[in-house]
Image 1: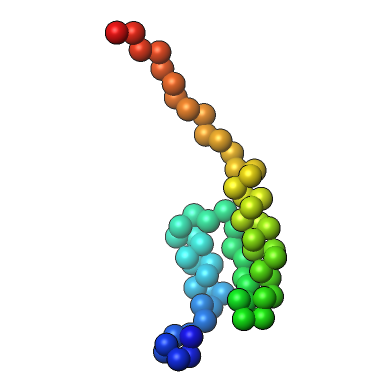
Image 2: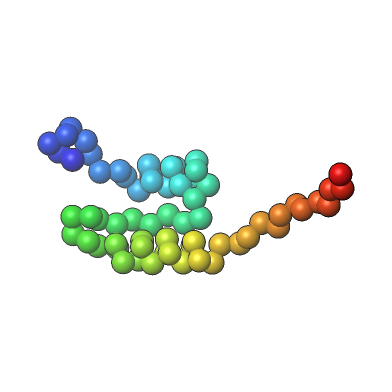
Length: 63
């Protein structure tokens, strides 16, 4: 990040983005140290597998 002139995202920035995109959960991790990575991927998989299916509004159409 430093070489690109960037800084890590702060917790406040992360929480604000999670709120903006209506994220199901906010977790922090480090790709450099791998801290929190297992939890992040575990929660992502859990979120996909356990998400609520919205009822489909199927209507009968006769032609």
